[in-house]
Length: 128
Image (cartoon, rainbow, N blue to C red):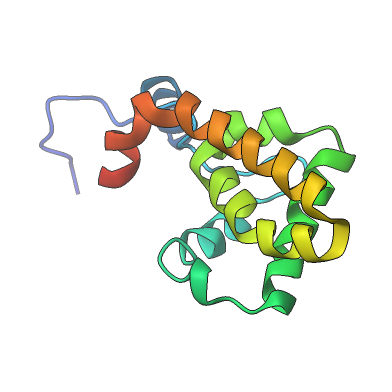
């Protein structure tokens, strides 16, 4: 069938590039450590993170550790900043339990700064 749209069809790569340019931190296409499918799973934790058990928080803390060990935290923030924020929030319990209050405090401060950085994109994130 022929398209009746007056606009030429966009390729998926062009759409992804346009989305990333229009809404930084929201592409969630995946990076060197966390892939797109994992971001989809993280999105499901937005409302339930407070009910997760320690063992589940440890799994998420491993995502944080993998991003930091690969020096890929900023890469993932640029791709899916709000997803990284959820990962940090969920991981705090396990980081506190396994690594101590100082590590948890440092991650919390980083998370607080990240949320301030993401604030201009909050409305777009809530609409997504």
